[in-house]
Image 1 (cartoon, one colour):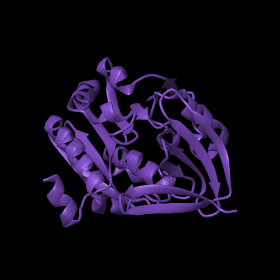
Image 2 (cartoon, one colour):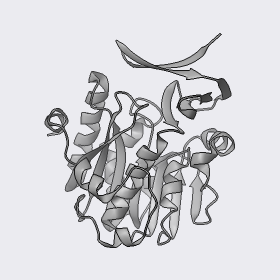
Image 3 (cartoon, one colour):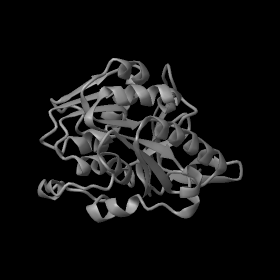
Image 4 (cartoon, one colour):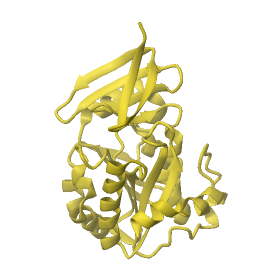
Length: 277
């Protein structure tokens, strides 16, 4: 008997992945957590039945969350990471020796525990001595946070436990938590299917309201709905395509990101640009 994981991408479209075995399953206080093994994508994590990451394509998502802002300001020292329970964002940020402090705020401790045990490809840096993990609501944490150079919001979608991380109040608190050269990046979802596109537009509209410098950029992540994924960029003073010449000198090893891609990822297709403007 074959086992397949299927995720509905819209009322009329779905994606299925053949599964070798179900490795882990639990119901936490916040959500259903499952980890599967597949022949095509390796191990993958789902929350409430929605794909969060796979071992085959997670590098694209995590690199674009971290290296885009770091290339704009390689001098970043203090980083706040909200969500990111699989550890992939921490792994990429830990590549920078100049970062002296990382705070990761994840609401669901069971997600982190499961990823530590079963998803070591992404969770390998969760024991970095510069990292402090706070198991609490990111919305509450950021209200009192201060002096961060970079805030990365690696949350679930806006209609789940991460709903509060797409509000104008949250973005305003992030703005107050940032230094003068601070940058915020977050995931905005897919622009392709109608419901996803509407959520993306709402989230980006609130980001634009708070940050004087704002932009959206894109990446290709095959296992996410439509494969076309949009990220948000907000800053006080630093333009998103102003890549520092010092970044190349760091010789950061990447599989997806490079500075040529950085320049191009902010050039959006017309249909996405029209939605956001």
